[in-house]
Image (cartoon, rainbow, N blue to C red):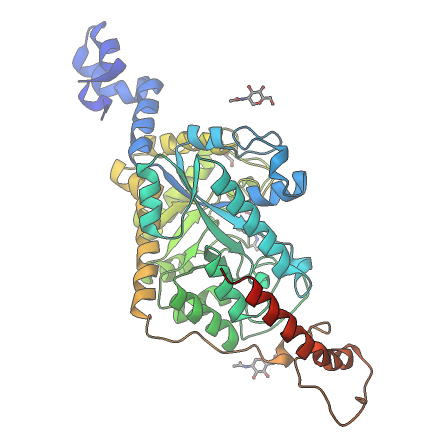
Length: 439
Ligand SMILES: *[C@@H]1O[C@H](CO)[C@@H](O)[C@H](O)[C@H]1NC(C)=O
Ligand SMILES: *[C@@H]1O[C@H](CO)[C@@H](O)[C@H](O)[C@H]1NC(C)=O
Ligand SMILES: *[C@@H]1O[C@H](CO)[C@@H](O)[C@H](O)[C@H]1NC(C)=O
Ligand SMILES: *[C@@H]1O[C@H](CO)[C@@H](O)[C@H](O)[C@H]1NC(C)=O
Ligand SMILES: [Zn+2]
């Protein structure tokens, strides 16, 4: 470790040796020599590389390339702030990649679009040797030993499961280990911090009985509950209900910038009571409440949250690719060392920073896994969302066929009622094809 304070190693001490007043200068060394602080940051981040809570690269792959990975080389991607070279330069060892689909897809093709985003993250993280798809805290650590960037998959918005607990379970099977309960739209069972969409407005009941069942199933599966984007009422209800610690994967301090996406001090204290974690978002609008911001302002969020709940409850969730403007000096994923340098210069200890960089997240992830193990005797939930709580006219109504003649109403659900007549034929086809494919 090349700390300049002792002036025993590194280029800093060499530099000092050429000058008189050795003692005085060496104690000033971290202040007068930016190089030595940078060296200290890189040394620290090599030992404790970052686990970042939120990145929307998959969304940008959809927007710019329609998910055609063959069009690009992920080592070096233009138009975005995230690629393999810059992740490596920024000492990012693990990234939660969001699989996000727009709220407009709620009760349309949200599930299919989410599957496609999972597919593109899985492809990216298996086709490139520099990445490794991980699904547990242990795998994440193992990836570090192999010098791989670990990819975690996180759903951003409960609308992605279309109010279906079986869909949630299948997403878990595909590797999803975290889900934000809402994005900018309410779901039938949880409330968003945003009032952008008018769907499912409510005055109370921020987490319905079905919403509680979703949280319970996430606890049972070992999927991290993410409260970034939920309303404070929903966050509070989840904190009361969840057996496992929860996270804000990309939110900052409301006291420093009073944006509805940020977290007020009282809620931070509730989060801490449940051993939760807030991973600070770097997006300028959440940092300074303006389009422009600087590193100093970002560090103000870290300082404030540390004062309220301590460094052991803080992480980093950059939100690159999910937002447009980032602070000067933090424009892409290669710039994280500049943030750590600012915090070191504000007297954050290496112990605190090692926690913020990765150990706090690992602790939460391990605790979520421990809760899952404790719940391993619970059966999968069979709770279904009450039909009257969802407003979906195009959902297939799975009633048995009406054998007493034509149904009285000729709406879409009556067509659905007739559909099961094809089922015996379908069953035979499925049976034959499964016999043919048994290998
Ligand atoms: C990335 O690609 C651009 C051209 O697309 C090139 O100018 C640049 O040098 C490349 N950077 C690296 C690190 O390979
Ligand atoms: C929730 O609000 C509705 C009206 O919006 C009311 O009828 C109901 O009693 C309220 N429930 C609780 C628990 O406050
Ligand atoms: C947020 O803070 C600004 C000034 O910093 C103030 O003008 C505004 O009213 C505040 N908004 C809320 C919702 O408190
Ligand atoms: C950073 O931005 C804040 C406003 O958010 C400003 O007051 C401060 O002077 C800036 N600091 C530097 C070092 O530019
Ligand atoms: Zn977001």
